Image (tube, rainbow over the protein chains, first blue to last red):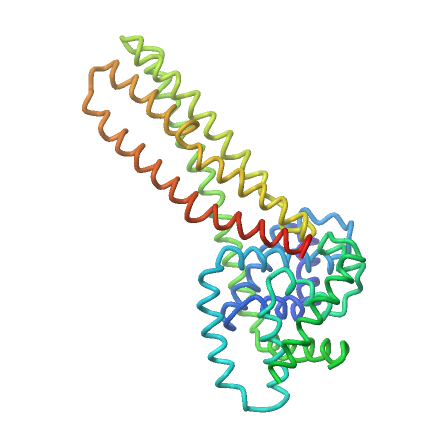
Length: 165
Length: 189
């Protein structure tokens, strides 16, 4: 890989590492898994760098790769993830009463993880504060379709949060 | 809870988690993984190409100089078969590259297509891989009247067939079903 591409890659990763890690966290049961998935995403970004054509912003492009890699890992490991998810829930229950702030985060995390993979990807983009136009570029859906879906997923999420409280 | 509170909760809490990542360590690990990945792909491709080009002169020699017609036909067929296998494998592999940067819906559609093509290869392994290999090898062996040498090739062929069918049922069918259901959910859910 050329020096120029390497510089673009490192800058893009530096700017987006928190977002990438948050998304990986929502698709992983354990911290170690999130790190593995994070690395898998970086590897895919690196491999795809040569095909980046600047048709969209690099951030949009990175979101696409992150979501696609996370969805792919979820599809490949559905059975394994079910076991890990149950372990994760147990772990979260033991942490439940540490602090109210931590509880809110855990409840949100738990509710996001209870959504199916595709709803999860849309709500994550919404929570990352992306405009519907950007979400449309990342997912390939229309803006109106996204608005309807986000509204429905938010209702599910709020219902889940009420139940958790 | 409002939308803003929800976004704030998501962005701040998960930011704290990411601070714990050791980027220097991650950089080394990533570098190792990239090198390992590139090395594995290069080695696999080289192995296949070297095997084919090492076998071709041997079978070409049999095709040109064997005393019996059956062995000569068998060797000729084997050369054709080896070239077809290399072409088929590299075509399918190339069709899977670059998909990951597509928009999610397009990616899922293309990924499903890629998996269906790979599944098709394994499912039809009897026709494009096992039969030509067994036929050409059998013709050579029968031509030289070495009938006992048919046993290992038939055993191997049966094993390859069973393993491929098992991969279709145990890996590709559930994966294609899952990708399909994700695609349906994101489009119509």
